[in-house]
Image (cartoon, rainbow, N blue to C red; front, side, top):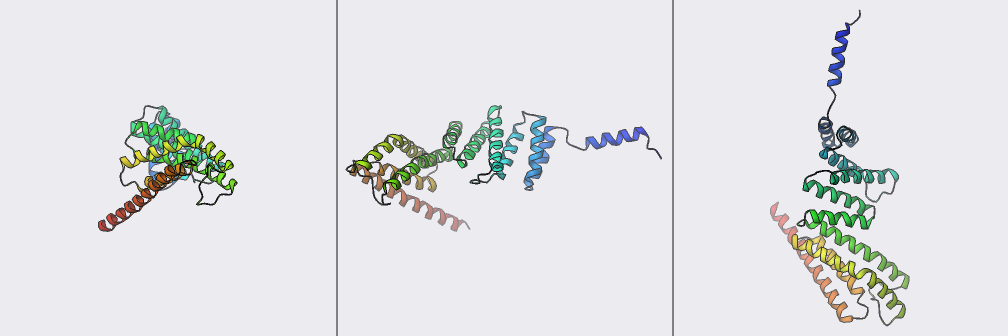
Length: 265
């Protein structure tokens, strides 16, 4: 028995209309899948949402977040790097659109985070700076820039110390010609970065007085500076004393936090 053509047409129309037809429909399905940790399905829906409407800012944000949720920091594979690159692309789309300020802040920090984990220090710093410009009261961006500053100073200094065969507790000595040469070169290269790192971490602590992670890093930044005070023992000792004071403040802050959490339980 043949099914009347009109019935077939109605069934086809009903079938088509059962599937999402708009970017927002795909976005809703993607959000539901994402909340259930079905990231592959969520990604497909968000990709369709931005395909249907390239101006759908929320879809770009969710798509970027889905890529980031699958990205594994420190894993240097093509697939993993591709996730980071696709996340950066979607966050950049948000920055290029007429997004709300908080969306732009989150996108800038998202890009900075991915570059940070890929060790693209300059790009990471650029976007954390963008985030802090968009929201000057966010301590996290200042903290992150301080961490980048420390990383850029610490690694080359330790490489030079290892090359010179220096012991961990020894300081560069201006009376040693080779150590003085290395110290002068590192000082010329890193001094402004160290000062910038101290400034950024200090801002983070001003905005969040119990920011113990920032306190720990400002201690490290003063130790970086101390090791480059090759010809000024008094200045080196002052920096080391300041670093030790920050260690004490860090420990006291951690204890206070732990006590507040204990009382709150």
